[in-house]
Image (cartoon, rainbow, N blue to C red):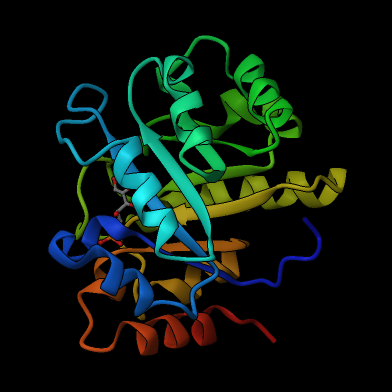
Length: 222
Ligand code: DX5
Ligand code: ZN
């Protein structure tokens, strides 16, 4: 894990043009990870796509797939995403009763384990499980849709996590997701994020690769 160069930029293909998904993914070959948003229409009020499209996305890139499960009962579905080629599987703590067992299961299968939490879920309730995880994904919008406005107050969670991870010297990424663009990414970097998901700011740009480079430059702290 220490071999990763920060900042990590992870374009979200939720904002890609699905009629030319392969081309859009190829247009961001300078990204670090490809973020894959899975929505089931129950945990969030929107449907996206599933494991087959995830697998197809993986065939279009040599980048790691960062799979964000916004679904109920993630434990029933994780194998599909491991088989589809996920390098990291992130599930929501609100969606499962036993996040630690699921983290151990994922790591036993050779993928990174991440948990995410909705904006209204306090991080304090989950600080004790952070050492079990490779990544914590802080949502800076209400999960379910791309193109929403960044919620700066969520950075308090990032600061809390940064202090814990540094103090205990944990190997755990802090990732942020929602409303990340050229205006907001710097404050997220300063709060302590390692990885940055951006959907509309990348695939909505005329030049997605240039958008990735710009975001990386803005998130690079001296
Ligand atoms: C929202 C998703 C995000 C989304 C981000 O539920 O988890 O990954 O695609 O989109 P933007 O960057 O447009 O806010
Ligand atoms: Zn996401």
